[in-house]
Length: 179
Image 1: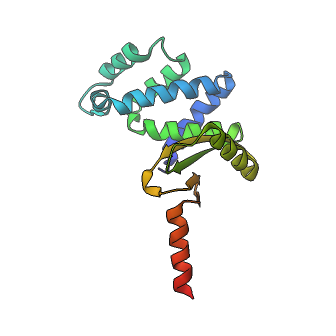
Image 2: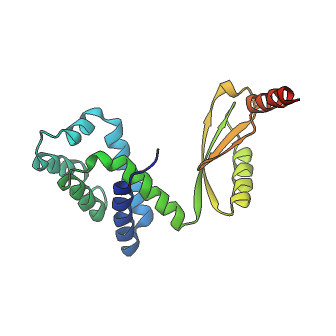
Image 3: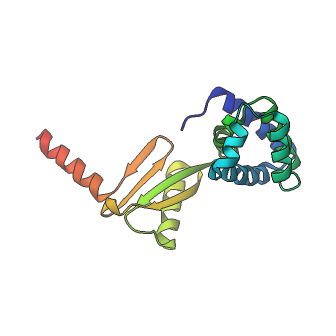
């Protein structure tokens, strides 16, 4: 999912505020929880996105759900999104904010998919190898896809490292066809 210029600008503003108040990680964690709650609850999401409902009603919902439960700066940020009718950008703003946080701390997110669940030792080894290769600390998000048959597919940004059995067989087939 790519982020729009507006999403990046809102994320930049929130990041600057979080950095100024030394709450970068705290706001990131709370922002993740807010986005997860809204994205996972269809009624809340539709309520916030409904153009026929007044901002006053939406502010009441925010107040009931989040005031005193999230950082005051994040709460005010959410109110501004309602006032500017930009609540539809919330997930994209969160993604852009997370990208800025990761860049600030020199870390990258890696998504690994394997045929079976990785052991703790395999996860640690993969993180160490990727960290060395990328010269950044790595946040690993692992998932299982039994359709891989074996091996591992790892995505970091736009790069895909395909060490799966299916990928190897595909490359072998392409190589045979070239000859």
